[in-house]
Image (cartoon, rainbow, N blue to C red):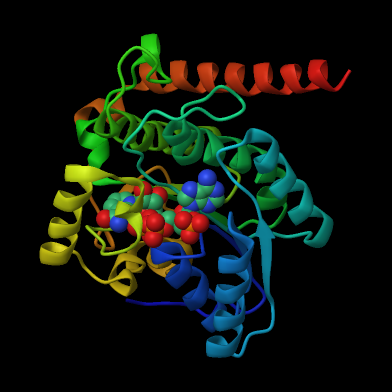
Length: 294
Ligand SMILES: NC(=O)c1ccc[n+]([C@@H]2O[C@H](COP(=O)([O-])OP(=O)(O)OC[C@H]3O[C@@H](n4cnc5c(N)ncnc54)[C@H](OP(=O)(O)O)[C@@H]3O)[C@@H](O)[C@H]2O)c1
């Protein structure tokens, strides 16, 4: 894989305390980029930050601690980042997970939907001005092949009527692809690209959000067919750094190759509706915070 030097580039990687995000952050630091890690657990994040600095010999590795399932935390990440950096060349929306049980954030959002989809939607919007000012810049959205089994259920987006981890996860990863395609259209002419990817079936900590039989089955699958986190990070790194994908936008990749996403994911009416609904959810949240502060 052709990789360019990342000297002089600033990269932000969410969910870089473990798995694919950790390797992505480490490799970007090794290529010379200034890396901003976004992690929800301070102790874990600081340990990985130190490890990456040691391994890469790169001292420009920063950490922002935030739980991205909370919209106010996403806003804080963007403002902390902007206080310290005037440029952003690569945004990797990697943080994500799967939940056995239906859990709701303080914003009233289902955790999978909030973390895997609405957080990247909001964070990307809040950082778009810096990305545009730093162009050429790239946005890399870590989706999953599970999107193909997903459907955006507008009547029950938060899974309150019927919840299953597979439904919630598939929906969130499909939503991220809709977002990728719609944003790519809206960013035409800006030299900011946005692509989505499936990293492979990766033996990471991903299965930790599962319980009981589903956890046992997941463990078996990851043990039997899971690829290493190093291999899992190859496609995000390819999209973040390779000259081969310079200017390429609005595409879906797996194994460092462009590949079609599900037929459903190309439905422009659904993606535009989802965009409007997402804006409304974020506006409601901003307004409810203003109301509760007064
Ligand atoms: N593993 C696979 O087979 C696979 C397949 C397809 C797609 N993916 C996607 O790949 C991405 C990375 O997953 P992974 O396999 O590397 O799993 P992982 O080892 O569990 O890493 C997930 C990362 O996201 C962070 N994270 C989760 N929820 C967060 C929140 N609310 N706020 C901030 N950070 C949060 C985790 O933090 P902690 O360290 O604190 O838990 C961790 O750093 C995810 O988006 C996942 O959906 C994975």
